[in-house]
Length: 110
Length: 114
Image (cartoon, each protein chain N blue to C red):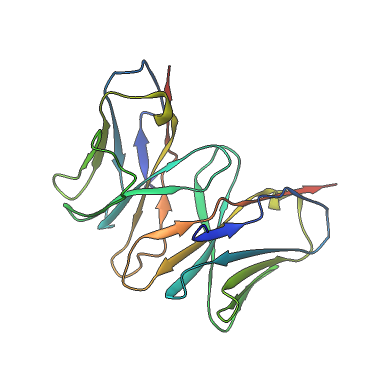
């Protein structure tokens, strides 16, 4: 089983839709969780950290479920510019090394 | 532009040749990471420096790969005797002390081994 698993998609949604991605992780000792965004042929950029209590940044909401070992990303009112690959990132306690998922592709169409 | 820079952006080489890539991190960042990314996959960790010390290396990193960060500033990644399977995007990232989780990536070096 991979350490971090994501559905590669693509998720194809119309503008204005709400879309959610999940990411599962296998190491119960994982302590830090993040979502990065990667545009086509560009480098990854941090979208948001995922806190135990959940967190929201504008149209984006991230949540952590430790019992089931997954994190989620919810995007409301999708924009064309949200089209990208969303990478789930997990780091175990005591290590500075993050593990990236393979990413979930989102395509927002008019 | 004071972001992470990488050079070259593209490299085409023949199998068996050696290649070297350079990464210049954001100036005050003491941590520097190298990753490899292939199509349809997320970045895969290769190695990590804190200042000039190489603290971790992936078990996937064969002995053909070596990285240095001699003065704790820029870093180089060398691949000796390249193989076609080395074709990938090589990404460098840096982070601030105490904020290792917020990594800033460079644009990457795309390597094609013929």
